[in-house]
Figure (cartoon, rainbow, N blue to C red):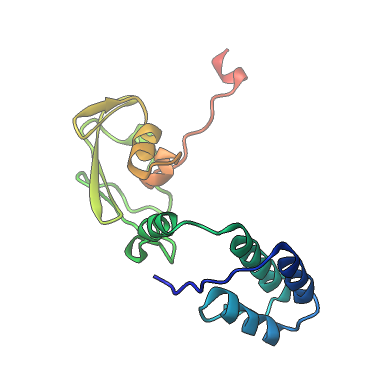
Length: 177
């Protein structure tokens, strides 16, 4: 946990300090960062960024900031092993052999019984194609891959892109006629 200095200030002191930030250069803003945050400053030379962050910190100090419980919870949520610093590289494995063309396979071209495998956050997820718009994941039947991808990721994600399949064309009003 980062060291937090117990700094107190009045409303007038906070306003004066915020106004003074506008007159400081980047080096002095970084020194102010060390005083207010108690940590090494960002390596950025973006003056406006430093001013915004320092203003935020002054307002936190003035209003009491986050409680120790909230800080501990935020630190637990932002546990470093779970933070993705680079885009995830993944590989989709299939039980049946599919040609290695430049284009990913289309969902409608895959046969019944094909198993799509995807490693996501260290866990292997397997989806079995039961038929046209029918899939099985962890013993539950789903009508589309997007619902499965959403369940795995926890946020809306295209099932075709999640399992590295070609996008399904949208149905238009003219196509129905």
